[in-house]
Image (cartoon, rainbow, N blue to C red; front, side):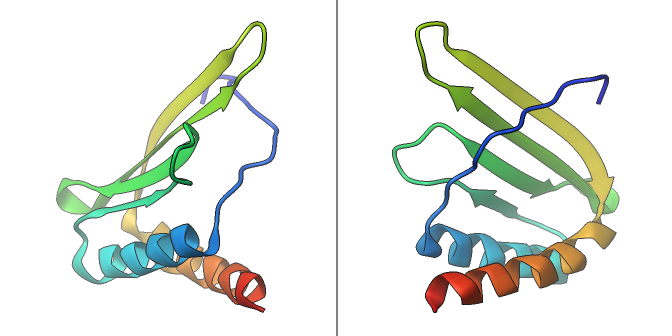
Length: 99
């Protein structure tokens, strides 16, 4: 991605993660739709969108609110083979959050 990076916490809640996982699994089955992870009333988000011919567009926006606010927006393309492994990695996080 030509050298852009951000390292900071990304917060989400159980409901948002459950919805993200359900949308991710539906996208894996149908190769259509959007899965977005975002806390209500927050600016930060990560999104996966299915496009034509199996392409998955990953995008997001990370905000640092301070005296000199900063925003990192990103997007890149991958293919549908990332969906099932990602869902497998998200499920244990959701189970931990529910415990």
